Structures are given as C-alpha cells and as structure tokens.
Length: 168
Ligand code: HEC
Image 1 (cartoon, helix red, strand yellow):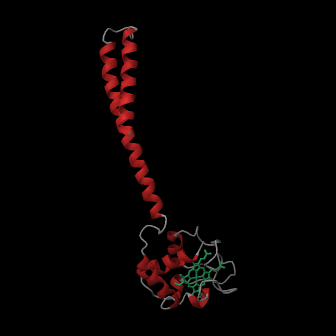
Image 2 (cartoon, helix red, strand yellow):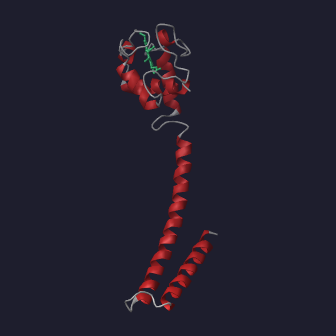
Image 3 (cartoon, helix red, strand yellow):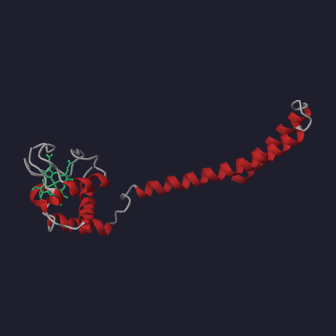
C-alpha cells in the first residue's frame, strides 16, 4: 500500500516537472534537465520520508512499552527492593510496613504527592541515596541517607524501584 502511494507521488512529481519544463522553466536553458533530476531527488526523498514515518511508529511503540517499568528497572529488582524495604533498609520502621507513612516520621510513599522529588524512579533513587534534611522535611524530622543504614547502591536502586511501584 505504502509503495503504491510512493509511486503515485513520484508520478505526480514527474508530471509536475514536465509541466514546468513545458512552460519553459526558468531563464537558463538546462531547467528541464534540472527539473527531472530534482524530481528524482524528490521522489527518493518521499520514499525516505515514508520509511522515516514507519520508524517513528516503531519508536513510539517502544516508548509505550518501556513506560511500564522505568529504564533499568526489572521485576527482580522490585522483588529485591521489597525485601530491603522491610529488612536491611529499615524503611518500614519510619514509612510503615505498607509505605502508608507514619505521622511526624516517614512520609506516605503510596500517594501521588511527592515532597522531595518528582516521584520518578530516578528522583526516588536520589532521595533514598541522600536522605532528607530536617529543613526540607515537612515534619522537621530528617531522613538519614539510605535510612541510616549501609545498604549497597544496588539495594538503594532496588528499594527505590519498589517504592516507585507504591506511588501513584
Ligand atoms: C528514621 C526514619 C526514616 C527511615 C529509616 C527512612 N525514612 Fe524515608 N523519610 C523519612 C522522613 C522524615 C522523610 C521526609 C518526610 C517529610 O518531608 O515529611 C522521608 C522521605 C522519604 C522519601 C521522599 C518522599 C516524598 O514524598 O518525596 C522517600 C522516597 C523515602 N523517604 C524512602 C525511604 C526508603 C526507601 C527508606 C529505606 C531505605 C527510608 N525512606 C528510610 C524518614 C525515614
């Protein structure tokens, strides 16, 4: 289908060019040749554009499926992060076992309101890595970096991935 459209476009361009040359073209005598050459260019361009459109379509499809999990996040990481959340990361002690938050302690991690980042996976990684200062904290209670634990960077990424799944 696409091909026949290209052929039609090329034919149209050719007719157009012939029309131009029949009218004498511009002042220099080579205009008919040039017009034909540029018609060939134009139809090649049309074919390229058609390909480009197809590629763009594929890219969009790719982006949509990526939206389900942020770049670099896997289901395994989220599982690991869940274990870190209630285990070595002691996040649950301040944010509650389900992440709903504890008043005057850890913020609710399950709502759409993100106080310290845009709520993106990268944003959450940064918050967990750096913690929250008393000044920045809405309750005046700080969050120590990595919850005050010495969990690895991998664990931070994993627990951030898990927290990202809790938020809206
Ligand atoms: C000692 C208590 C404490 C521990 C442990 C703790 N947090 Fe926090 N967390 C806080 C406080 C306090 C805030 C800031 C709350 C506020 O501003 O009201 C916060 C904020 C956050 C935020 C930002 C929420 C937002 O709305 O932007 C994230 C994400 C977060 N913590 C994740 C974690 C993770 C993951 C862990 C475990 C590695 C963890 N926290 C451990 C106390 C804690």
